Image 1: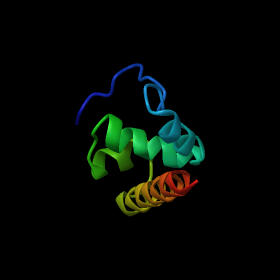
Image 2: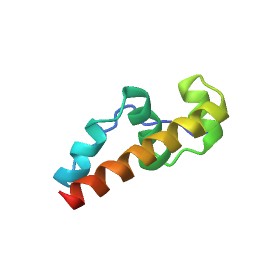
Image 3: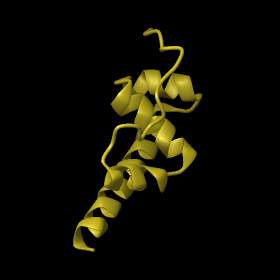
Length: 79
C-alpha cells in the first residue's frame, strides 16, 4: 500500500479560474475522489480503501465528478 502525504494542497490551487470554479461546484465527496485519483494518482482500490467505500462506489463517484466538470467547462465555454 502506498503511503499518503501528510499534507496536500487543496484541490483547485494552481488551476485556471474556470476549472477552479467548476471544481468548487462538486460535492465534498466528489472533490475527495477526484483529488485521490487524479492528484495523488491512487488506483481505484487504494481510493476506495482511503474513503472507506466500495471500489464501485468510488468509480461511480469519480465518473459523476468528471461528468459534472465536463458539463460545467462546456457551459462556460459557450457563455
